[in-house]
Length: 530
Image 1 (cartoon, rainbow, N blue to C red):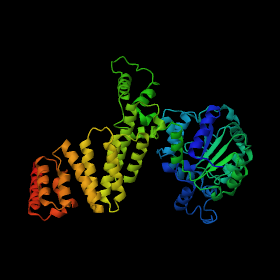
Image 2: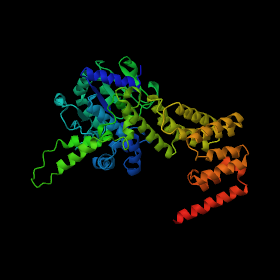
Image 3: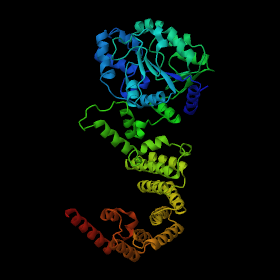
Image 4: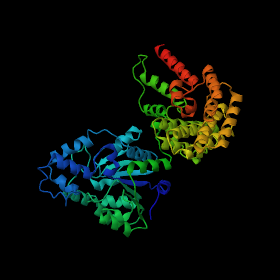
């Protein structure tokens, strides 16, 4: 039996309510996005940097045997190999930020890691959480009952520690000492393994021996299903206990842990959603400034942070709003005004994506927003504009035009502050669709919409000029183009726009149009000089 991320979230919630929060076991897969290489990556690096030391190893038979390759190096060589990745590397990836969120919210009691890096402890510190850190490569594992949770336990040592266990002999000897601790862990709390293959060290046989089905065990991996797992021992273990051990495939740590934290409503952390309030809270731990010199930097800063924390952050931190309110249900407790803020946050991010040529992502964001509030005229209007712009760039644009028209028509049925702009854009989309289908009824519809728009604002006649061009009414096209020129309502960058707008191709060779382009070009030159 497998689970999806929503079901895993429910299991974590139940465990927290039962005062038996999950214990997570993390491996190298949790750190790869922070540029810490996997075991396979380190093997490749060893072959490149220490070819003489590993010349007796079989490159085919031993290609996945991390312990063998590390045993070919002396301890100084191992430290030099790992230092750039473990000590000098200060990067933090999102898997560890999400883990820190889950720990901070009480869903994870303890993280047992096979990694030497300090990414999780740094992620926790960054969020204002300071878990206990234990190095079991040197600590007495029989004193595990003294662990103060929440905690991080480095099973094989830390990068900055005196001992890192790498080889098969080292991990086997050490694993034998961990039996009591691992048994107590598995018998006390449910567990989840992530980023760990189970085939690079001597730990897995101990896990298999000590697991007694007291609590549920979830194993995640990148392989689609159990049968694709490379390690036969892991595969057999999961199948043997399949009522209480569960495999979840196609899992990558960063994506999965973020989604899990979002399901449990502890992501994004306040550092990202309101950094002013977060920093102010962190500064509460600092004792009052001791000098009576009238230069209290602490009071000055906290006063500023409190003031900023009360201001709406919707204009600058809109992605945090989107993470926090991903569904209609997540906004149930918000006021109408607050929901409006969330909708504009979606709109701002969607427009940013579109400006960066990420059309599909922008439309997905608009669709998500419209599930929260399907009648938000601002989002509907800007969604339609996004689709219409894309339609002009494509030849297979019929469905895009139909969708843009549908959205504009929906906008007209709602209260909005700029009916004229909606009518103007709708008429433009109808013109494009009419031309594509060569449908006179559609041309007539576009004309009727233009007339409605002109009743609201008679200055905007450019679309009407395009209509007359497409319907071979050159004189009327000229009158309306010149009217738009006189009213300064031609499109932005008018010379380029009129030169490229295919709607005007039927009048492009007319003398009056050539002269109009010359006037626009001359004005452009004068404006640049000015």
